[in-house]
Image (cartoon, rainbow, N blue to C red):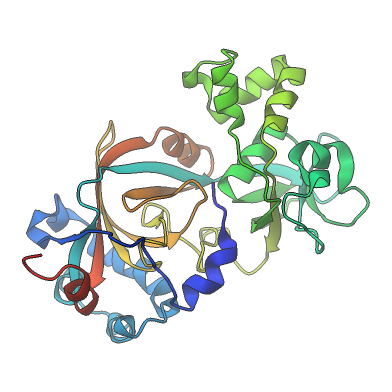
Length: 342
């Protein structure tokens, strides 16, 4: 779930990562990265340039400046970075996320009955009047906080999980919404609860599968949604075209198949990250750490951004694979954290 963006200001200020005491680092060679020579390094460099200027740490500034001179991408990464495995004894877990596209309206009309709310100005964390159930029963009505209304409660729920999305309006326009905050209540997965109860099979826990089940079981469906008291608030984003991705934790558009969400306690936001993902669709690719997520915790944990729409959603939903994650660190930082022979 795209959440926790309240830490973005701290990240941009260069005060992280601040990994727990005792974190282990292991430097490896580029020749040890499986498939490194076959990747499109130029595409990775383009994504890197989107957020590199936001890294305030002094070791990064000359690298970002040189990257803007359009160097040979592969040579740039190999010359100025060292591949480092954070906690080498931990096996990586890769999942995926996407930007949903919903149908909606600026007004409550026809099938568009489910509001997308902006954050209340007087929001208090864990306010009992602002659980998911309380909000969906109307605790925020008549406060002028509605950004838009969408037509399906399951799609609205997955919008909350992803933390950003596009809404195709009934008037022909499109708006984009991004994460603005949450109510502070504990997140519990509605699909996982239904699986636990034996109501649905894990193979049916996709958006389309859940939508069909909810239509057939509206009361049970509503109770499952309310099982998750966590609720996400949004902001309208008007300065990004449909062709660009949603905003990540550094408040910049992210790039499909080149951006990952990471745990910023271990990985500097904006850093290149080499992904070696197994599973049914193996992946060997240089990506950029440009986002965070409330479920993305640990040194070998990453969420791959697959893009926008249903196809991206299907790919993201199928991704839960093991592998290895290697962070490319500037030489000066790598020599300090993972000196040769350590």
